[in-house]
Each structure stands twice: as C-alpha cells, then as structure tokens.
Image: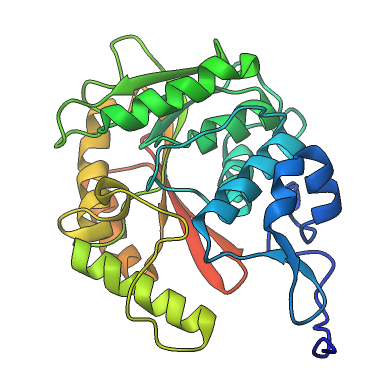
Length: 305
C-alpha cells in the first residue's frame, strides 16, 4: 500500500524560543542511537514520516527518556505509573523565557541563580532543564510525598543534579510559599505550572476533547497519554483560584524572591489576575506569550521590586 501524500513540515519550529533545543523535528535515528529501547515504539506513519504513537503512554515515556538522555545527558529518569509525563519542548520554553527575564543577556550561565519550582512533580523536569542548560540551583516543592520520592530518585541517580536540586514537601495544602521559603533565603525567581482544571470532571472532559480532536473522531473514554494525578491536573476553583491565592501569598515573600512567575493557560483569567496584582501593590508586571504548535500559553511574572 502506497503511503499518502507526504505532508510538508517546517524544518524549524519557529514558535519555540530561539534557545530551545527542540525547534527541529524529532530525529528518531539520532534518538534511537542514544536510547535503543525507543526503536520498539518508532514506526513510519501514513505520510511516510517516522513517529511514535502519542496515544500510547509507554511510547511517550520512552520518547521523553530519549530526549532527556540525548539533549540533557540524563541517564536515569523514571516516574510512577499514572504520574504526569511532560511534553519536554514546552517545558524547555518556560525555562528559556525565564532566563531572558532574570539574567543578563551576556551571561545566562550563572551558577548563582536560585529558582523555586512550585509543584516540582515526580518528573522533576524544570530543574533538570534549568540545571543542564544554565547551571541554576533549584528548590522544588510538592504536596505529594510519592512525587517527592520519585523526583529524589531521579536526582540521586544523575550526579549532575546532586547539590543542585533540593526537594521540600509542602505539608499544608493551603500554603504555596509558606513553610517552603525559609528565613534568610533569597530566590531569583519562582516558577509554577499550576493545575488549571476546577474538578476531576472538567479535567476528564478536557482530555476527551483533546483526544477527539487529535483522532478526528469522538472518543468516549479518556486515556491520559501524558498521565497526571489529581493534584497535577485540577484544583478547587481552577487555575484562577490557585493563582489568586499564589499572588496574595507572594506578598509575604516579596523581599525573598525577585520575580514570581507562573504559566497561565486561560487568557480569560489574565484580567482578574492583573486586578489582584494591582491590589497587592506589585511594582512590575510582565506577560510573556509562548506558543507550542496550536497551543498558546503565557507566563505571568510579577515583582515587588
């Protein structure tokens, strides 16, 4: 059977940050040389391109392992079953845009930069990229003991992350910075990829829509190819409530963190978040737009000066 007419893909994903190592299409030949176990999941699609089945969680995890080994020299990366398996190009974009925000353009590889990752997750992905790309030091917090345990195993098995990434369990689910930022500490920036659904039902409905759009047919059962625990995917009141709480709590730590930042998936939330930022008298507000394929997101950053 002859393959369908081959799609013409852009060689460079120009929407990604200029420093992002994932601007070019996946080179599966190079990736399978780096991680031979990936070969089992690589196939030639109907357009004659090499790919993996992005609906298969095992394939997505193996692709991530290959990307992390090939581009970031991470030899050991395991996450517990059903935990969030992040799309690495988009996570890398966040780190590169943060580098633009906080570091002198002539010296982005500063070993003095200290970053706080709120919701580090079992995958530890932001610290991995930040350490390997810029040499930053990270403190990662999470409310899930199993996520902290999994992330610590990643750190322990990759020597380049030791003495660079430190983890703290948030024991009070109502707090974000409280009990994590210690007396006398200072951070150049905090980052966060917040849960953006308001309930498990909403998260499930969103997954069904995405899968239906990707497959071009109605999907009745959601299989999360990127996984995700409840605390990773939804928060009572949704993204807006979470970020509103974050902004109010950040007031108490304005002298200990130069820039507070978070991803904001829903543009409609920005207007209310700007009002909240005005209410707490921040000195600077920046909104940085990002784009991965058809998905538009943005980073909201604020500083108390």
